Length: 237
Image (cartoon, rainbow, N blue to C red; front, top):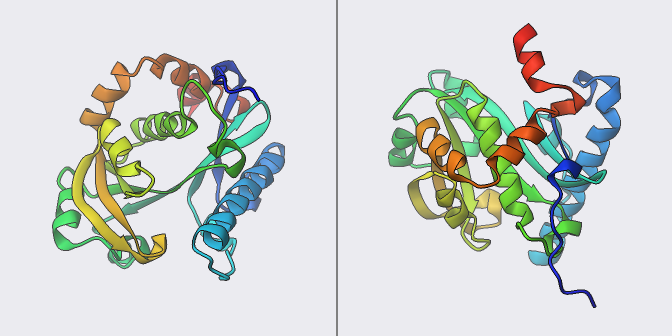
């Protein structure tokens, strides 16, 4: 059996930002969308059924109602997905969003400390087939790097994180520049597992991101966003 770590080739990574609603994506990305959905559904279905022994049906609307889906592919295979949704805390509908059910008043105050435009980041997912695939850079750290890049390119004042303690996600978020707002909060959406509630602010994330030895490689991949030249798209936007 080969026990050596795979050397990740960043030139073989492709990044896509998809609309949660299939019909809002261009025809050229619909196959990418389906692959990303199938990867997400298979991974979380396995989590609920095998880790938590739940027979609950995993519905598609959790995926389809998101503003954006970040999907990462390696050599044509989807290896990671994250959901993004933009809200403004001055909007009363944002305050009733189910995502914030576990967030207490202190955590909410900390989240809005630098502005009300919030990027909800959720469903941090490394595909089932990649979870035990050994590599020189853990796949979850690669996904984290692209999540930070997405946030830094956004106009949001802050990005959220509800990070599962059991999987070491809280620790990883702090390494990425997050600010801890509440620790080991029990979350119904995480099958009653404890989670750390964190906020990502631009200054702290930017500082950590630029110190990451792989950030130039992440930037290079981001230039091929959705198969196009990202910097040129911004110039004509």
